[in-house]
Image (cartoon, rainbow over all chains, first blue to last red; front, side, top):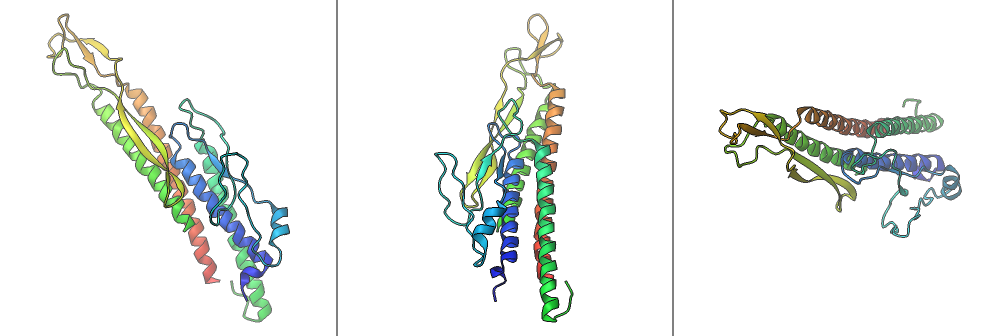
Length: 137
Length: 136
């Protein structure tokens, strides 16, 4: 049995993939904190309802890139979600990255990831208990 | 792997900021470097500029140093007749470096460097959490 077929676990791995992708986007923002004309980016929040609607059963509910600009190109592989430009404040050089808010997002991201992995472990240990394999975990 | 990407980008940011720090150090060190002769210009303040560039292999927006440019003009003048660079009336052109501006710039570079380190820490924590899943 593939554990990914259980909707709950499918949702966990989707969430983890999203958080990882967001971490990369945040790293880009921080690295470009002094690049003229660079705007801070962020991922679109996962939509719980659509995740439920598309993700039940098979566990491969499609997360699609939203194309809200005419220049947006359709994703090739397993891209997670739309990268939206969200400038919070702009400096004279046209840079729209605020290190403070990026740091906030980085720490929120890391703790949400910790939350997901903890939930994952808890659920695994519940399954183990049912199977009689002990409640360690 | 995804988390590798954020670490790589953060490293690119760190190396860009350390190059910026190097330029700032040059400026501060040369804050009093005058020219050899009266008709030459003294040390000119250098400015580093960054550019974002899509790394096609990783698919992420990396940061790179676009270039280092010199600031023209805006020199100071001090009266120092004995200096080899002094003109007919005894004035010497001094560099257009303002140490306070450089210090401000230095703090900013340091702050950005710290932020990059933070990102790496967070990515590392996420990675070790993932590995922990295997321990059951």
